[in-house]
Image 1 (cartoon, helix red, strand yellow):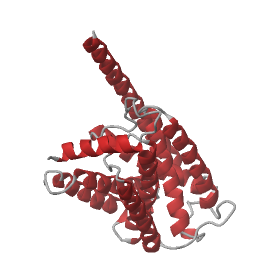
Image 2 (cartoon, helix red, strand yellow; image 1 turned 60 degrees about the vertical axis):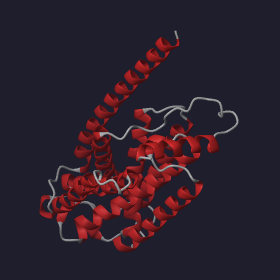
Image 3 (cartoon, one colour; image 1 turned 180 degrees about the vertical axis):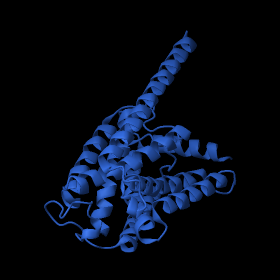
Image 4 (spheres, helix red, strand yellow; image 1 turned 180 degrees about the horizontal axis):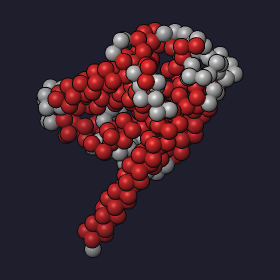
Length: 302
């Protein structure tokens, strides 16, 4: 039995076991997108915007890591509730949740790993906002904690017997686990990206090139039959976050530090426009696909 048949069989079992009595006879509707090249382009755009927007609120606007983390986590919670309550896949809503996890993950990582020392402040900023401005755990300790949490989520997910394949996640429980993993992976990815940019000696461009090379290796492994594509997906999903973090820092940080010094506000505005255009395009494609499928079903039923 090939990978596709195994995934479909697991999805069918999960749908029966996890469906409520009300939904048992209903048609299962897809809630998450197909994984295509456009998906990965939008993921990188969203994670890069998450980095620049998170830094815009916490550093440039001086709100600080604590207040920004609280505000962005509430934003994530609101978008997540709407996404979980939706009845079908909506590209605009899905990518809003991805963006909110990227922004919240940026400041959550900063709050865990950094402290209030001047080296973490934006140029011209002497202090940050109200509240504690970081736990000062450092990148290795912060990453170890986040890796442990992510592993625990996947172990719990595995014990439920539900699939890890994004295209087969069609129930509330599976989607809740999916978004929990996304939030933690985006926070972990920020820690990895900041470590590569700030502490490894590679710099922003060097860090981005290293992660890009790792993604190319994952792409090559897709042709190796013994390596599960689901495993490669989750590795790639985690790694695109530090790619976005290093790319965001490269755009916004001063030239003296190896960046382009475009600023968090300007970079965020451009990235938001790009992501918005991609989201609208995905929404239009999804509506066309839904309409075509509806017409085909009606024609087949005549």
